[in-house]
Each structure stands twice: as C-alpha cells, then as structure tokens.
Image (cartoon, rainbow, N blue to C red):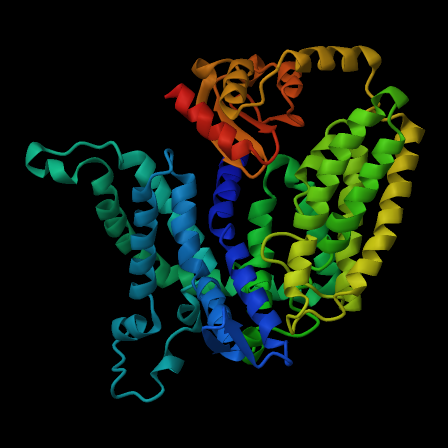
Length: 509
C-alpha cells in the first residue's frame, strides 16, 4: 500500500472519533442557551416538578464537557476501530488498552518514580519531571496508539495458538499483544517523547504566531486536500490537540476553556470561523452560477441537483456534493474555491469575527454556538457570507462562460443523452439494488479487496482500478470517481455512502 493510500486510511479513521463532537456541541450549545435566558428562573416539567434553569444548563454543559475532556481516549478507540480490517469491537478494545497503558506508565507520577523521585518527600516533585509528560494525555498519543493497535489487530486477529491456549486465539489474543507492545512503545517514548512534544509545541506556536495569515493558509490547503481525502489529517493538527492548537474543543468548551486559560476571546475559533461564509453562502452562490450557465434543456435537472446540495451546505455545512460537482470537470474553479476559502478564513480571523462548530460550518452550528462566550461578532460572518455569495457567483459565472467549462448542465448533448439513457435503466433506488449495481460497475466482487465509506464517499480497495466503468458509475448517480493509483478508488455517492458500503459488504460476504 502506498503512503498516500495509507494516509487516507488514517484520515478516514479520524472521522470516527470526530463524529461524537456534534453530541458535545448540542449539549453545550443548548446548555449555554439556557444559561443565557435570564428571564427563565425555573422550568416547569408538565406541571409536575420545577427545575432550576441553571441546574439544567449545568447538567447539559457538564455532559458535553465530559466528551471534550476525553477526546484523546476517543481518538485511540476510534482510530483503532476505523483502521481495523473488519471494524470489530476487539480492535477498539485494544486501542483502549494501549492508551491506558501508555498514559499510565508515562504519567508524571510514574516518571517521577522511574527517576527515583520520592513524591511523598519532595514537595515540588512536579517541577523535576519533564513538562512533556504532563501532556501525555493528548490526541497525538491517541492517534499513535490507535494506528499501532489497528495494525496489530489486522495482523494477529486470525492467529491460532496451541490447543492448550486455544481460548486466547484470534481476536482475544490482540489486546494481550497490544499490552506487550505498548510496554515497548512506552519505553521508547520515555526517551523520545520530550523531543516530539517540543517539536509539536514549536510547530503549534509557529502556526499561532502566523495569526490570521496562518488561518488563511490552513483554509486554502484544507480545501485543496479534499480530492485525495487528506484534509482530515490536516484538520487534526488545527482543530485538535495534536500540536497544541485544539481549536474545536477549546471553542466548544466556552467559559470553561476561558477559565482554564486555554481559550482566548477573539482568537480561539479562528480556524473555524471563515468556513461559515463559504459553506453557507459562497458555495450556494457557485451553485446558482452553475445553474444560470447550464444549457436551457438541462436547467431543470441542474436546478434540482444544485438546490438540494445548497440546502445541505447552508444548514449542515456538508459541501462535498457541491464541490465534487465541479472539482474534476473544472479544476480551475476548484483551485479558485480553495483560494477564496483561504481568504475567507483570513478575513474572519483578522477581523475577529468568530464562531465555531461541532460538526461543520452550517446554520445549525452557528445558532447553537452563537451564545458561546467565545463567539464574538459572529453575526458579521453572515454579512461576510453575503459578500462571498456575490463573489462566488460572479467569479464562477465569468470563468465558466469565459473558458466554456463543462460544469453540470453544460455537458455535450451526446454525453447528456447517454447519461440520461443509462440513468433511466436504473429504475430502482433501493439501497440493496444500488449496492448490487455499484458492485457490478466496479468489476465485481473479484476486483474488490476492501470496502469502506466516509460521509459521502465509497472508499474501495481494488485489484485493478482500470476495470471500473466510470461512465456507468456516474449513471448510477455518483458525482465523481477518484482513482488512486491501480489499487484504490473513491466514489462520491452522497450521504447514503455508508448504507451502500454496508450492503456491498453483505453482498461480497
């Protein structure tokens, strides 16, 4: 497996722990809304009992904080599960075991013991322990443990022991092996973790020192890496505690993060804020431009596609259906989109128009986080968004017409007729039937080595990507087919990707 494909596997697996963030965002967001309702002193529940509103708010916010404070262990479990070959609970358990071993062995108190420091006698023993070990419980370690645990699971989950030890064969063997390996990993980290930690802190400080410019650069590369699926790996550096930035948890933590000295009003959230104008307004403006430049005979079809994708982008921040509509047919537009995203993040950060999200930069997250004490001048993002709507519309319309780009609705008549004819034969939108059809167009189960999904994409391992019928795949409704060398392919099918992947696995098995 190539390095690019392996990095994509890691990026995909990062979505497993990230998927719990909306739960934290909803709990904290509602809690913050209740805490700001000063006119509500009590909440009456069906006339039976009264709850002090502040207690309800505290109850919700504490629940949400519990998720954020345990993100490192969720990364260890989620990455181990996400990278395992068959998504088995034993892999997740192994990630948990590995994380507990490392974080316990390399905790400050354990390090003090290893260094011969009597914590009962030496008053300021913490100052004698390298500061890196005070931060051993972080997402970087969680990701590292998850990767190692998954690789061990994939290697030993089918291993058979002697009959006398048969009970410990297969998947039961993996946590035992992980325990032993993590002892060795802990020993290595004992010597190298301070250097790794210093390097990560230096990188995080360098990015922070770039300020608004750093936010803009991140926004540009965030969009640019989407076609190959590596944006998740980049996001983990800026959004979580891989290099000390931890933008999303600190922002969602709100007042708690401020009190702990982790968050700075007007700064925390700058790696998120600029996405709102792009996702809620900019891309719908691009969609309108593609509709207006579509051929007259294709306007109805284009309108239905663009409207549905724009609604998803505005309310939820899910933009892949829109982006993949022009990503490959008009790469110059996608490059301009990446540039505009970088500019948007720069403007929002420079002006300190800040709002954050738990899932993505859509209206739902904006409403939930608008009362967050770290959300300053968040309403200005709406005005910025209106400007970006116009900019995206004008830029996209001009470039499409000027260079006669084949965006949706502007395909050659022959291609359109063929596509429509093929689509008319589909006739069945049932997920099982659709999975059968996708299985056929990718070369059958004999051509598949792995089936997975990620939000809107089927991620497939294949023996030969040339056997995939791209035209037939798009006729089934796929927005794009991305071939990653000879053995990897991604098919953008929309938000039903996971259901189709599950059905394909059943059919293959």
